[in-house]
Image 1 (tube, protein in one colour):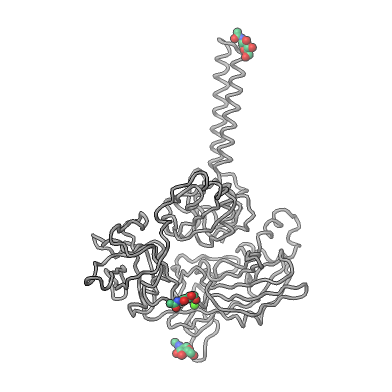
Image 2: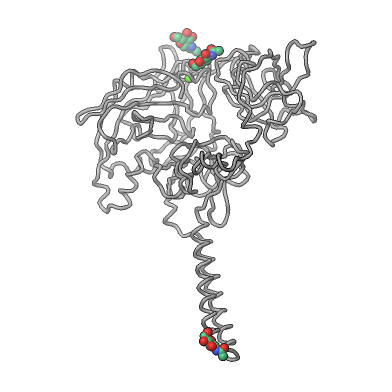
Length: 527
Ligand SMILES: *[C@@H]1O[C@H](CO)[C@@H](O)[C@H](O)[C@H]1NC(C)=O
Ligand SMILES: *[C@@H]1O[C@H](CO)[C@@H](O)[C@H](O)[C@H]1NC(C)=O
Ligand SMILES: *[C@@H]1O[C@H](CO)[C@@H](O)[C@H](O)[C@H]1NC(C)=O
Ligand SMILES: [Ca+2]
């Protein structure tokens, strides 16, 4: 991952604008000379000077305003939408990998809003309409502009249009506004999510094999069976897919997509929208939906992506990762490390954002130290199938510093959270290499990272990132001594299917004193 400092680079567009400006200035002085002969020379000179001044001001303003400027698109107002950034004369989208509260904070502040309500993922405000300018953004939260954050470099990404990152920002004086000029609220926002009164029959249609296809539902009972209808694709994911697969006795969702791939020419009307499952429901009807089954206004509550309905692929066997918190509790300790020794780690965003400021501002930065909270992270696959990264091998990224391939965008996150629920330090957000480091007796390890080997975790094997591996830490140099919550999440964005996500996070108590650090009282839960 190459980290670019965007603020240090004049863009080529800025350069060509300057050339144009010079040309215009040259032309204006020629014209000025011609006028001077025939008319009031003093006023003409004065006018030309003013003109030139305006022109320069205008171009300066445009240059300053446009490079790195942001806008929100697809929302209901200027305070929400998918984020687009202006770079090199073009607007571009932002990918939602590693997109979270600190990035939303920077975006909302840059746009002049008091702060974020929340970040949004997976094209919440529609698919990205432009190519991606930024991916794997990593902001500390205090940056003036989004362009000051770390990211993979302009245009470097491995994202699909469905991965647009967005934000919902707090509006100015929200209460005051709504009292004086009530804004029309869209129907969609007025519909609270409900559980259905009716029982539903569910089936998969149009798949190439059993266990896959478009999801169709119809109401059971009520003068015989109603007609079959589609499920709106908005918000459809693995949690919802798992419920459908379980309900049909087909195992687990290997893939849950919003697609028109399984469509016939004429799609049946959308009967369900806003579907949101926790994952443990025994029937799709038990999940939340945006209102009752819609027989009348079929597509009313579904976004404009016509034909993109919910679909799923079910498989009988599935991986299940579990984080070993005991191993973490036993191995956790503090270490102070020279920044000179952290240069590789800095390239992979494994230190706090303050470290980059020190590197920029302090000529002797390599003699400074960082305080690292180190621990072993062991992840076991207790499922019935191997866990495989979701990015195809040819798209894996070679990380020169650490000499291995990264196969998964975000595999694990480590957060230190204070009593107020704020995240005050975070660990490595980027990917790892996945392999079988330790297996139960009788199981042969099969996945290995070396030599572009296949990556994954076999059933009953563990992938272990020992505490002495680079980046296996949280940089807590700026943290005050005290008590915190320490949260570890694996596969945090549910990008790779699993049997259950309810054992993917450990929430522990963290005690940080001048002499030691300790985690204890861990509880397993959902990321
Ligand atoms: C020429 O321009 C100057 C400055 O704008 C003004 O004071 C003066 O009256 C003008 N003279 C004529 C003849 O227009
Ligand atoms: C699913 O899990 C949630 C959270 O643990 C719980 O509140 C809910 O009752 C569960 N629902 C079912 C149907 O088990
Ligand atoms: C994994 O281990 C469990 C418990 O020890 C065992 O029941 C299961 O058969 C094992 N699975 C495989 C594929 O070896
Ligand atoms: Ca799991």
